[in-house]
Length: 423
Ligand code: NAD
Image (cartoon, rainbow, N blue to C red; front, top):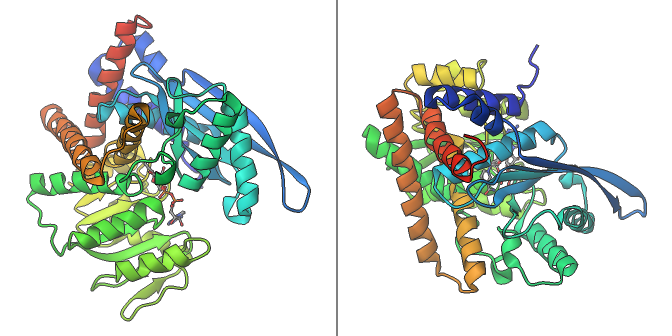
């Protein structure tokens, strides 16, 4: 009964809605509906026991009219080409909505990284880069971390790329460790950018954030930092969840203690954490975290978690989509009708790619900025992008996701037309 929605079909449907309002020509619409290029490849890896496994890898360069393709690489057992296509499309709209001179791309490998040793992961990461090295570069396509890929993995990939090309080119990949040409402020950039958009939304809606209850689904890189930053801002994180289940404390969870526990957990899970007053939510009921009466809900895990099935039970005032694609189009309409203010994914989580862009700029200049400069520039970009979308939504009387599409698609279509690819 509950067949999983296809994220790429959703991405195309969202584009179709924007294309109709913008009056894109049929050719422009058709061009923007599909990736410009995609690569499928196999990566043989020797495992620690001496056996070999062959992994399936993908890289999609969705659109590079506004600059080199840009987007992360996911390692996930459920990875599919359609997920990668959807994420690459969303990267195209994301770089356009924050107006940075980059296009959109994405990569992935079907694998179970949590069941692989560090050495096996290194061999897989280097193998992925061997397949891709001649297809990417600072002026072509620039990968970055995403689900289950880390700065350490970016360092291995950079090293493999530089070994193959025989050149020092740190701008080929972003999200690198700071001592290896990474940018200060990259690790928390996605969450921080999202928090800036929440701050602006709260101003527009007249909502006080001090002491406001918050729920976060996913406590990994993005969700974990969102928790820490909300806590620092004086918000009350009452519930979090990850793939092992959830935690609920109506008086507010002790986020620094929880973050420390997750940091020290071998699989970076909240499992095993206890504190007085906190109740454990079993794994099969983890979705309850989405349905609490909070001021801000941060979906920060995977796609398709707010659907037609549960949208009516969402009680948050603001849904700040740090994850990519957490809300299906049917659910979007329900949330809009309920008056819930959704900050759409490719706006809300654009802080990561924005600081990735700053990282590339610093790599190109070989000159590195202090953290304050990164944070200040991130705030400027996110705030400007938020208001462009908010104003578009007001003017066109559409929901925020469609407004974000209108802003972004118009910019990409303009670049495509100026290049003379399609009129
Ligand atoms: P991550 O792997 O560090 O964390 C993912 C978290 O989600 C983990 O805590 C995991 O346990 C949890 N999770 C998985 N399945 C779950 C489930 N069914 N219920 C509840 N929790 C579940 O990944 P991340 O980098 O934090 O990315 C999270 C989301 O943010 C993804 O959608 C990603 O595409 C998006 N995103 C990440 C970045 C970035 O900079 N890392 C940038 C933009 C968008």
